[in-house]
Length: 186
Image 1 (cartoon, rainbow, N blue to C red):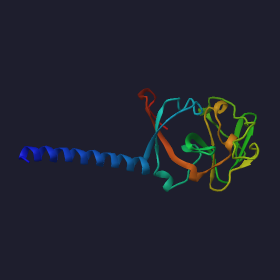
Image 2: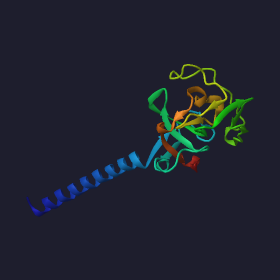
Image 3: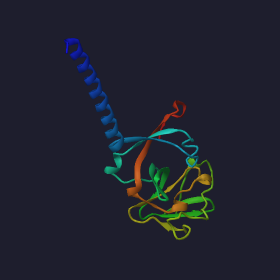
């Protein structure tokens, strides 16, 4: 093979290695650091709109547990192949109550401007994984969190499927990155 043939082969091999390394690096980032998600439903409106793309990070929960106010992605208790996104309202050991459309945690009414005044009423049905509807007051079990969508009148959340295990949480939502007009830190 001529020198120019070796150069072309070397250059092509270099590009292949660069592409393989880039794909490998991207997969490592997605697996261990951060992952993008598209918002499929209106359960978090108006905080997150249908079609928004968000970035969820995977590092912080290695050092701390989810906290009230965090927006998290997690595995759907009814469908392991589906990822949901909701806001953490209460953590293990806390008592959640719903009275006259208001959420109470440990006896204190929450100030939830992100719900835009939508009522937080109980849901009169339950997920297939529960034997009965969720009843109140509800004590969040150890190792679990209580999550709710910001669009309370259009969200199947812990009122429907109960508290979720922290081990089901996949990321903490960091920011909306697309469309650019909706860009914001969460």
